Image (cartoon, rainbow, N blue to C red; front, side, top):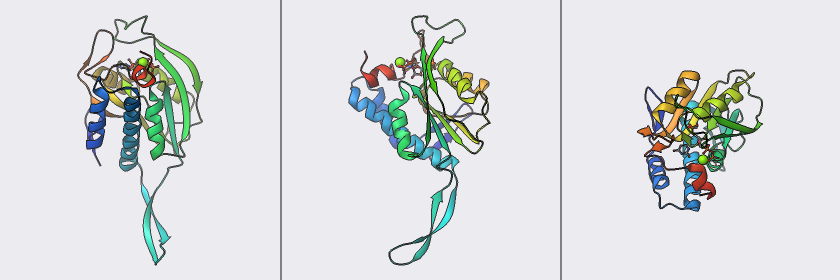
Length: 225
Ligand SMILES: O=P(O)(O)OC[C@H]1O[C@H](OP(=O)(O)OP(=O)(O)O)[C@H](O)[C@@H]1O
Ligand SMILES: O=c1cc[nH]c(=O)[nH]1
Ligand SMILES: [Mg+2]
């Protein structure tokens, strides 16, 4: 398994994840390559979740030549993936390569950047659309958003996802790039969540952007800048 357990989060240390993140960080990486990078990172992260959190069971198999015993991942049908619009869309596309039969939820939650970051280090969050599947106790829930900056968006999303639902067996908050402030905020408000990220960056700037980060993930993936 290529996950480093730290006090603040589990960090995916797979060489290909680091390689892909470096391409995403590069300001010369254009839209198509950027989107493909997020897809690839989602796929790698999905495999890491399987490797780290899911069990296998023995199954008997008939090969063309003989009978043998193999292993199968248990619980692949008990996965719920939450797509935080908009930047998570290509990231989730990659996750779905690891969990093709996952149930999916969609929530549109965006920072009100005109209002700016408040003195408490949080952003007002606008939620426009919420469509979530029922969660069952046996489920592994993965809330995916490539950027975890102040944590304002993620805390709003988790409130909506967990509202009036049973606690799932596993709850992952998955990001590509995270900031220490956001990790702290989410872990304080949702201690039951496992925070999984590819990189814990240094700090946030005065506009709430992750430094060194990769810029605005939504704008780069959707070419809106
Ligand atoms: O931790 P936070 O400070 O809340 O910031 C993280 C959020 O910011 C980005 O979304 P954005 O609001 O830019 O929306 P977008 O995905 O539509 O670009 C990102 O995709 C996260 O959802
Ligand atoms: O650095 C950041 C912070 C929030 N959202 C982004 O897309 N990038
Ligand atoms: Mg954005």
